[in-house]
Image (tube, rainbow, N blue to C red):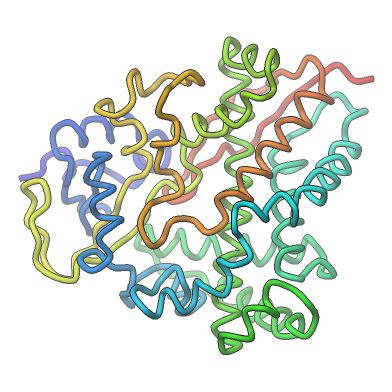
Amino acid sequence: MFPVGAEATIEQLTADPHPLLARLRAAEPVSWLPALNGWLVTRHDLALQVMKDAATFTVDDPRFSTAQVVGPSMLSLDADEHARHRTPFSRQFRPREIEDRFGDFVRAECARLVDGFVATGRAELRRALAGPLAVAVVADALGLDATDAKRVLAWYDAIVSTVAEISAGHEPDPGGAQAFGELRAHIEGSTAKPSLLADAARALALPEVVSNAAVLMFGGIETTEGMIANLVLHLLTNPSQLDVVRADPARIPDAVEESLRMEPAAAVVDRYATRDVELAGASIARGDLVTVSLTAANRDPAVFDNPDEFDLGRPNLRHQLAFARGPHFCLGIDLARLETRVAVEAVLDRLPGLALTDPATPAGLVFRKPDGVHVRWDAP
């Protein structure tokens, strides 16, 4: 009944999913994929429908991968419980306050990181800039700035790896639970000083603060690192669009949005059907996994002309769904955009003649980014 979905493999979805997703979107926009043991939604309008209807398509299910690792959080709860967990944090991420709260820190950290390699003429920017910047900002936001950055990164790597293993249908590595235990101990000790976590602790029990902090940590690091790495890669492999940005740095925000459309750092979001429901002709049973492919929705030709082209001139860039929609719309969207914009401004300003030294492509089943962004420039 779903022949394209029946032949889909985890390997295809991980390496280069775009040809497969295009076939699914055209022929089976809601398709059963045995490889995922669930439904995959690939059309933009249907993706919006699923994400906005939390009463029918919920995250509140014991199989939800992130909850298996860190426990219940704003990411894995719906309705009143979701609001109770999210509200104490959302007050700190109001768009008008992001620049005031984080702008100077992000610019200073970017400058410090670039200072560390600018004289060498070569670097791998994902690990030299994107990752360390994301870690530093998350640590600062959560009041973990006194914790060694390598330790924070190790926790994040273990938690994200475990979530990805569960999403792929594998048994979780115990390293994720161990990393979460270490993170919990550090967070419990940090709530005594003024921070985002201390504010949240006034409204939530300590285990709830910890679970939500873990979600913010790996979400903030993973997606922002991917956003920066993917954008640098997209610009360096599209010279005409790089010229546009160099001529007018005010177009960098457009580049951020188009890069997110081309390759969302988080490729999919999972939901579970709360009732039997029909969606685009597919009969979804109560309890079925329904995965929304943000990657596929963002290349829907019904919404975006020439969707496989990187084009800053699109009139509807903000229709991209990389940050999801509905009640689980990404909390840190404006902070992630700020970090990505500042990082790209820094490399274009301070690394003249910037060019790739090795080909690279984004990859990943759940989180998509290049393994590395190896570049050279004209060193001073």
